[in-house]
Image (cartoon, rainbow, N blue to C red; front, side):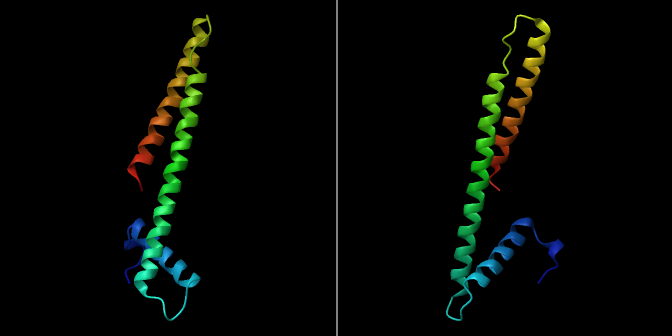
Length: 103
């Protein structure tokens, strides 16, 4: 087996998940392919959960950006509000990008 630092993060995660499933379902009759199927299900669930959390955080940022839109008649307050709104939108864009990458 290759040293841990030679493994990609995905490969390391799969091996760790495989070991977890092996410990949870350790019996002589289980086919190793069945274990890999369970590992892949766990990883797919993890990815879906991560993407869902990122999308939810993105929605919160977008909602915050709308709330921060300038509404004051004072120029100085409008500039601060606009900057905060832009920051929230930038963060939402980053979260969307991370969720879209899928990993």
